[in-house]
Structure formats: structure tokens, C-alpha cells
Amino acid sequence: MDMRQLKYFLAIAHEGQITRAARLLNMEQPPLSRQLKLMEEELGVKLFDRNRMRLKLTAAGELLMKKAEMIINELDETIKEVKELEGGVRGVLSIGAVVSCISLLPKPIELFRKKHPQVTFKISEGDHFYLGEMLEKREIELVIARLPFEAQTEPRQYSILQLPSDPFVAVIPSLWTGNSENQSISMRELASFPFITLKTDKTTRMHEQVVNEYKRHGFEPNIICECSSVAIIMALIAQGIGVTVFPKSVMSSFPTTVVKMLDIQDADFQSGVGIVWLKDRYMSKSAQYFIDSFRDVQ
Figure: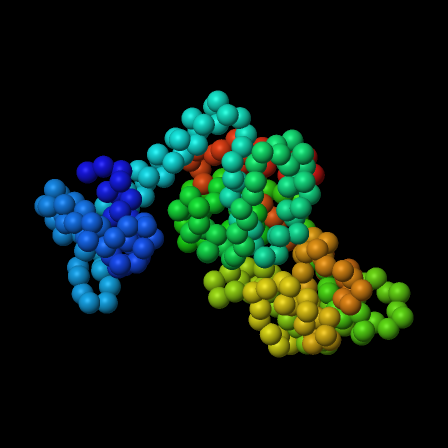
């Protein structure tokens, strides 16, 4: 069995159908079917249970997929490391960021690009669970996230560089303030408005932190909308639908002409932020230098 066959096997395992896997690999279906048959004959086991709709991995297939992914990832990382040894910092740096941390990226990227113009970026956005899976599959090298990082992986597998904490602020429609020059708001005033919360089905810590702050002051937020998109929440606030409480850094990416950012007078709570990556895994020079660019911004 060789690397080429392992890649064929992984394509079939991920796609669940030989037809789709062949299309992904830019090859005909019969040769791919023959390669799978040869692998099963060589190993002396069935790798898939076959039905008309989808191929399902057997226990042996599950084990092979896990090991094959480790082998392919190890090879890819070795090739990258060898190339960097001679070629310097170049190529594509794949990173992830949760929706509320996108505003933290522009300055570090600007600093990094001045020093390493031959590196390009591929940025993925999502919640902790999605980005945690991408880290596990080596599709990205690091994640900029709110802390704690709520992925399914055992937390001890992660290395985390904690960045400066981010204070929470209230965001309300500008049309509600009129000509008021107030730069702050109380929790009691905030609780009187309909509330829009940033939340996904699986990542809830920041939502819970804000709700608990309301409760600590004796109030229950009037939640009228749960949303996983910062941009959508901003659009709703601009239209006068409700208010929210966001980490202050989020606001640097949005104009304050239609929404107004206010300090919260009687609440001083912070959102943790950090850079997350897998321990004991090769990290490219690009990723290492990009982390350094965050230190330079601080």
C-alpha cells in the first residue's frame, strides 16, 4: 500500500461514495473501485459496508482512516518544514477566527505583511466547534478566539497565548439617543431594551457571561433574537430592533453613525481573548511569526 492509495481511500471515506470521490480526484470511477478492491485484498479486511446510497466505514476502515490522516498530515507538515528550511517564509497561512474576533486581525496582518510579503492568507470564520475541527484536521494552523475555547477536543491538547482582555460595552441604535452626549448607560437602563444576543447552538459562554451580568444586577434580559453573525446583529441594531452587549474590539470594524457604543456604568466585566493552536504539532514559521505580530500590536 502506498501514499497514493491512502489518499484514494481517504477521498472515498470522506465522500461516502466512489462516484463522488472519483470526481474529487479527477479520475474515472472503475480505476478507483479497483484500487479499493486491491487495498482490501492486501489487508484481508473489508474497509466499507456497501449499500446503494452510501459507503459506511467498518471498524477496520475507521482505524485505517484515523491512521491514514495522521500519515498524510505528517507528510504534509514534513514537506512544509523542509521547504521552509531553504525557502524562507512563504506560501499560504491558513488561520481561523470566531465572528467576534475578526476585528482583531487587520493590524497584525498589516504588520506581518510588511515583514513577510511572500505569504498569503486563507481565513476561515466560524464558531469554536467548527474551528476546533479544522485545527484537528490541520486545515488551519491557529485560531483567534474568545476564551475559554469551547471545542470538543480535550483542552490539554491546545496551546493558548492569552491576549489582553476586552471590556464589554453596550451597543444601541443611534436614533434612540437623539442629541444626547451621554457616553455611558446603566444596567437598569440597558435591561429596559429588547436584547439581541450573539450565540450559536454550540458556543454559549459569552452569551452566558452577559446574561449572568444582567442577573447579578437583578435583571433578566428581554432576549428577542439569538444570532451567530455580528454583522446581522449590527444591522438589526441600526434599524432600531434592539440592543446588544459586545466586546469593545468588535466595534472597531463598524461605523458608529447608526449605532452608538456606550460604556456600562455599573458593570466592569471582560471578555478573554487568545490565540489557540495544537500542542506537539509542527507549526510553520509563518504561523510563529504571525503570533509574534500580535505581540507587537500589544
